[in-house]
Length: 395
Image 1 (spheres, rainbow, N blue to C red):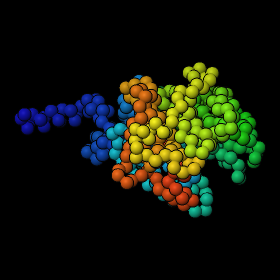
Image 2 (cartoon, rainbow, N blue to C red):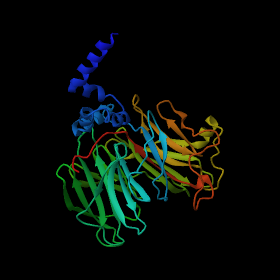
Image 3 (cartoon, helix red, strand yellow):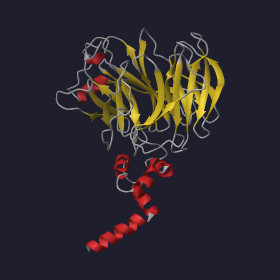
Image 4 (cartoon, rainbow, N blue to C red):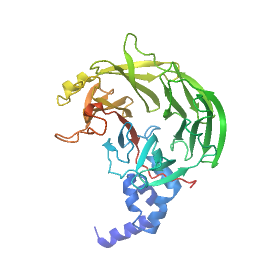
């Protein structure tokens, strides 16, 4: 092709803002971050909040976003470092290095944004939301601060496929050790708080820090027969049943609460000597009950992957970090599991065990640290990461 003709065509595209935007919408988020340096025009376009929202929505498939990676964090260890597990096209992001604090704790991942808390050496706590892809973050301030030594939980409700706005939900104990809580809600659309919209009482088994946003509702885990969820639009609390524990002498020890494709899932393990079973439950669409979707036995995974050595440590099965990830082409979910230092999944689409991420020969995700004497004693918490150029308009 004639070089002059190529330059002329490029100039026509470059000067056509609408056509340029349509091309850039189809590029990965990390590429767009780099392309901000091309020109002032590209910087202005890619930084525009409306373009950022359009790009996020362009990445959706059948009404849902799909994560590009999982962040694995060792339970009970405060650190800015996480193991990154790629799920599809993904380039490494220096997670949270731009936050000047030695201790960081992820509270929730929600469709591209993270809610985190940070601690300084004097144990002072700050909360913020951030987009790791753009390294943009916003510190949170509250109209009603937590009472001293009282329970205080911060969650996020955000679905960019439905709205560019988000809500911060705060659950705070009104009297120490009372199990009586107030619900405060911040709306980015109005940049305002509604304080004590609801006063309610919980039970000892409720896990208010374990929140999952799905279908416009914020759900909390519970080891009781019922749990709470918040209809975010109506700003009202409702009850939902929880799975009935198995009978016999088996004690439920770990729960993994999550969502995928608009469905709620809960996986449970039981305290028993070398127990390799994982019970996967799914919530009915009308919230009437949970049904047991599958009883997965990790021994079957060892037959597919003989290099796995699960159940070699008493009362530490060697697997954890369960996450529920959908497929862009099929309806069924994948159950992603950290197993003996590798990342595998059970794919309900074809009923097969598959390897997601193998760090390499002789390498394992996770190492014995601090009070862990054995790799299998570690428990991992997974957080979904979505590459996104979304920007906060209310900063």
